[in-house]
Image (tube, rainbow, N blue to C red; front, side, top):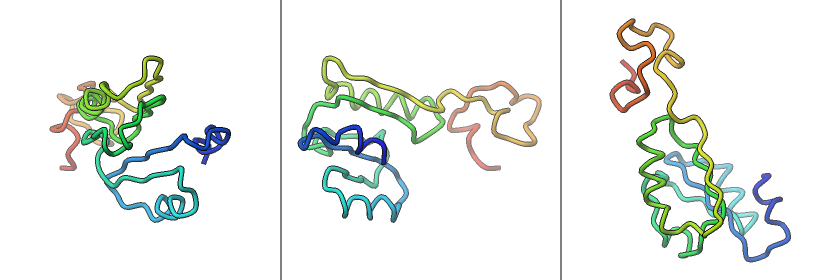
Length: 120
């Protein structure tokens, strides 16, 4: 895992990973490297105690395509960010037409929301 290589020189550094799905590979990595901690929960449910009340140096949001989820996660993590923290967000604000094969004309170009993200 590249994140663990990035912190190789700092024995106190940690990588905390969130996902709502139970990933056996994440559990295996957690068992093999104590610097990696997997939390089976949404990043939008972040709590500072999840990360041992440490300051967050790098936050990478890559869990959902809904802007609302990333905003909620950012709001939750904001008090824990270090003064020079780096925050990156992946795949946020996509549009309905980008992910549906047969998008109704009225939905084309609409931003992803909880309503447009449902499988109908």
